[in-house]
Length: 225
Image (tube, rainbow, N blue to C red; front, side, top):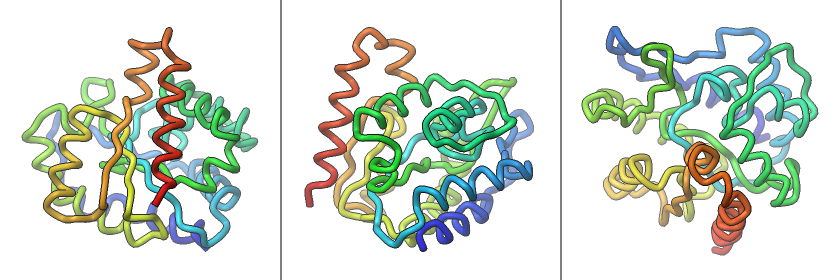
């Protein structure tokens, strides 16, 4: 089953990760036993089949979403309200708010997760001075973990995910970095970029439905072979 393969993939997300600079800390929610249980429940619930999914890649886990729950773009509120999985963790992430609004417009969690698998270019997250730190914030740091990202991408595409299309969340630096790597490695036939959910919620909230429709159009396009 895909669920078992995903859980095995998640067990290895620290493989090949180099030592981090002293001012950057690793977000590792998997040290928490409850997170292990939540992640197992989530993937068993939505990926307990053998159907391939279209991959969607964000930047790296944030401290209020996957950095706490272990599930990409899923805070504790959405985990309980939409996925119907209870947790003692308490978190709210604005990106999760948009993603689950979009998922509802798509047809709900069962339909969405039946078609797509979300991860990140860097499947582990980072903080600096107590704030989220994106892998590309410093080109030297991005280069420092480049081999790690390549290794993890190889692990990702061993899952039953399609390689004809990848959806990238983030039209700027995330898309640029990923596109350059993909040009070298030829992992995916095409990459479809979308605005990052945090950008939408922070700067374009008044245009929420417009961006939601753009997501719907891109998701539909990704399903067309």
